[in-house]
Length: 157
Ligand SMILES: [Zn+2]
Ligand SMILES: [Zn+2]
Image (cartoon, rainbow, N blue to C red; front, side, top):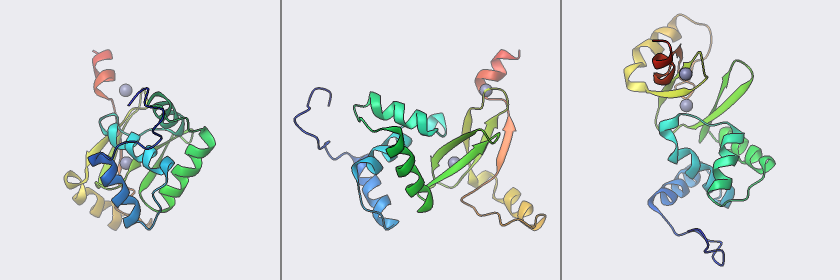
């Protein structure tokens, strides 16, 4: 809560409980930055995936003074452990998202917004992509689709 600075320990919420279990399942210790990064990503699923800078901004506005270097390090640890995956758009921007729910990505070609597409809708497409490609195509990487997000569809009318 804002103003409760005498307590550095946030109250255990259902989300934090889930994050702790997620970290333990992947053999990671539950450090404060890891829990904070997971809670930010879990709380912004509707916005798709976030860059390190966006994660840091959200942490700051939630009252967590975590510097960019720490966010980078935390995110790389979580990617190495497969808790998060990295999505590179145009070789410029890397966004990160949770891997606990299998999904593909739809990327807006105009503004770069990323949306999650439920994997159940595209498993057949992924299976076909595998047979037609010599690449290793894991479920965790998913497919990346390109199109226009709802906001950009409105603009183009
Ligand atoms: Zn993703
Ligand atoms: Zn867009």
